[in-house]
Image (cartoon, rainbow, N blue to C red; front, top):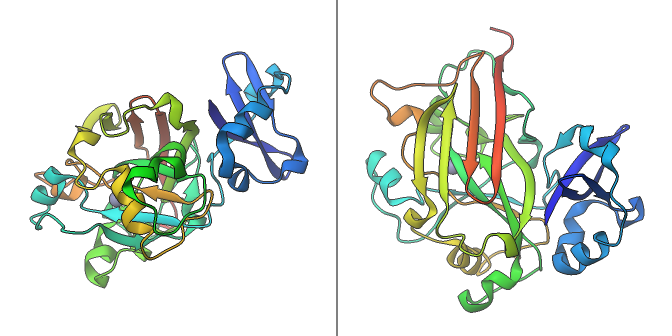
Length: 278
Ligand code: ZN
């Protein structure tokens, strides 16, 4: 099932997207994140709700707009570690991201005033369903609700100058996510998905999640060894080769660009780029 969030008045509603309509969750169910704790029971209840075709034209938001945790993983593709001139990590490189940076597909990435090195990173996002701590690899997938497509937009000057990555990757609008949450039953092999990023139609990144150093079960296992993973937590699993700063010559996003990210079986997000304040 594909779960979407849509704009409704001043707030948000969520539901299940089908080809000819949306099954809208009752407002009494609250935000989407807690309802991912038993995602298949949630899907079964949604399936009983009539389709509303008029909602297909509603503006879509990020499918998990307020995750309790937004966790970044660095250098998790073998080829990307090599192109960055850095050793293959022995453990997942983890950093915290601000959830206020999340936007949906179609929304605008804003280049901060004075920034000239804003870069792209295509990533598979894992959404936690069932809460857990010290989750074994063998049962890790029982805790995953599904997947989203992410663009881990990064301000490279700040990233390299500050020695930590959180601020450089957490500017408002820097985390496009979408276009929906696809439940795990539709993605039987998360470790075998093509992943691609284009800028103005030109392919910049093209790889497969086969190249992940730490796959989805390993990430859930290792992260949960020290932090409780909550329903709705999003893990951005890292990016393959082809980021702008590693290209010859380096390339960065500019006002007027359009950047798209596609993950096989999950979907495509498309975001225009603008600049403000010079
Ligand atoms: Zn990243």
